[in-house]
Image 1 (cartoon, rainbow, N blue to C red):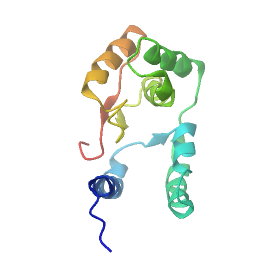
Image 2 (tube, rainbow, N blue to C red):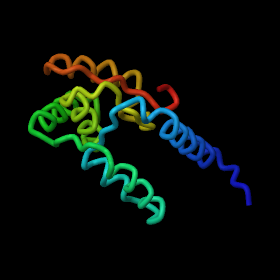
Image 3 (cartoon, one colour):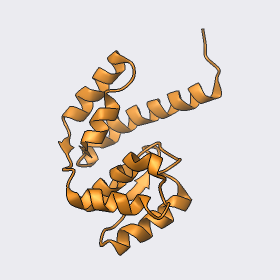
Length: 140
């Protein structure tokens, strides 16, 4: 049976674009992840989670240090990222603190959001860091 639910189709399209990026472009970059990514990759369907975990286990892990925690708190405190999305702030902070040039995401609510990116750029710069280029696999 063909599913025609628009949300399902959007999600499936993003999955396919991500897989295509992974197959064609990953060799062009030094890929990194964090313990947060590993936790998220392990959620959901057990079979799909195993595939995701096998992929991310091979990546270098960014250290969750005090600098990242402090910057994440800064990104949340003025309201750029709501407190309920503190993990999203931590993803961004880890990339900024470790000078990761690109942060790939499909999270349009709190990360790949044009309004929020302006605030994040200012907050990172005022803390001595550069905001990574935040984009989707389709954009990169």
